[in-house]
Amino acid sequence: MDTSIETLIETRKSLHGVAELLLAGPQWRASRDIRLRAWPGGFAAVAAPGFAVAGGLLVAADGAAIGALHGTTYAGLAAMAGVTAGRPEGVYGDGSDTQPTDQITLDATATELIAAAFADGDTALRALDPAGEPILWPEHFDIAITVDEVNYGISPGDQHIPVPYAYVGPWKPQHGDFWNMSFGAARLLSRLGGVEQILDFLTEGRRRAGGS
Image 1 (cartoon, rainbow, N blue to C red):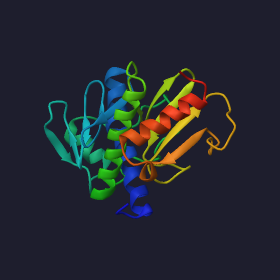
Image 2: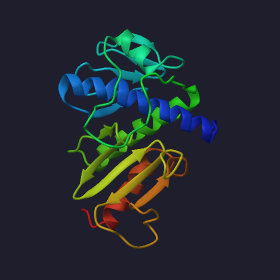
Image 3: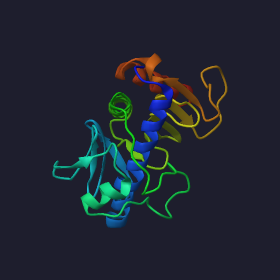
Image 4: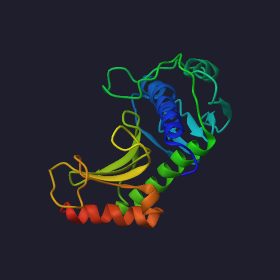
């Protein structure tokens, strides 16, 4: 990884704030939907007003650039987009703990790393369950699906593990060396490699959890 853990964490928190305050919040107020999705260079809303993050830019539904993320505040960028910055109030408890007046701070390398994690995760999850639709949840800022009471996903890092990782989280407790986390099993993306290896891990987790 060509960036420090501290820089990755700072960038991830800012992007998490973007997901909540600039995408999910305005989408919830306009369309009553908080779901997000992976998008080339980042992530995007699934409904109006349809904003997306592509690299270091906030873009409109028609692909037009609204403004650069780095160095501005959530409120300032929201004003440029014609919306009010704010999380989807009353929908969930946890989140990024960012405020509209906070400044967005992004490192280009860390931003690319997080975007790649979501892109590879989306591809692997679709291969694992072709009938499913991976959702990027703004609350935890991870992309996931649930199949037969087992959660499968990719996180860009969180309070459990600070760097991007893939996980399998059965609803029922599991036992054995494979299950190395309190919520199930997790493997660092840097150790797994690419999409094929992520899929192998998720598939093995599905088998061990009793899935088909």
